Length: 106
Image (spheres, rainbow, N blue to C red):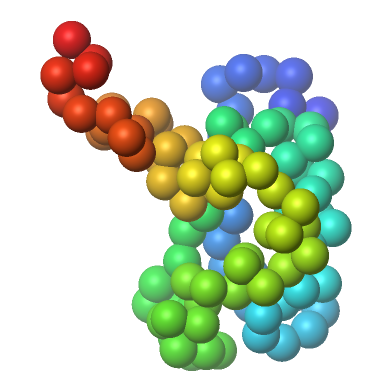
């Protein structure tokens, strides 16, 4: 969490099955995500599936949808959700954000 002081540091949320104390949907991690959101902000967090390893613990569709079942997901603003699953990664990789076309970047 101390690394949040450095704006170039981003956090990838992945391999939930490796760090969770419970099984799918790994809801025991909800409070950790809330702490990361409060510390880094959603614009510095990105979700990753950890494919193909996640499929050793659940099917891919369930792995993708696990966050949506967490209490913190229900509390998050829509833009925070979009950041977590798309826009933060898009910014890092120089891709258009949702709702943004290539012409918007010019």
